[in-house]
Amino acid sequence: MLRAELQRASDAADSEIQRHLNFLNEGLMELAEGDKTADTKADRDRVVELEEKLVSLSAEVDDQATVSHIENVLDHLDAAADGGW
Image 1 (cartoon, rainbow, N blue to C red):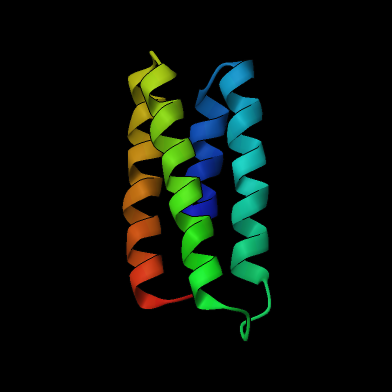
Image 2: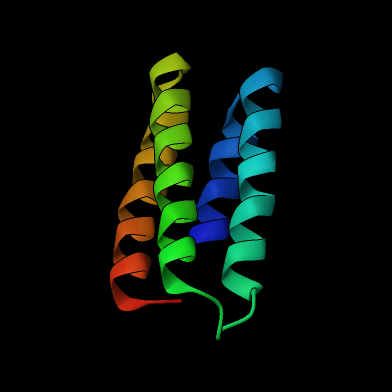
């Protein structure tokens, strides 16, 4: 769900923002598919980093559809992080 929403944000974005969103999507994939026995503090730090980058990108976007998708991703990220990966 998270990655699908991030992909929708990327699809709606212009090329520069799209490049950043695709990079973040790759990072999210690595985080979600990573070693489940890994340090959860490190995972949480990566989630915080992803959130900060998404907030920053959202501030740069003029297209409301892209902003809405990014906000949905942030909501899902919070919920996923609270429930663990």
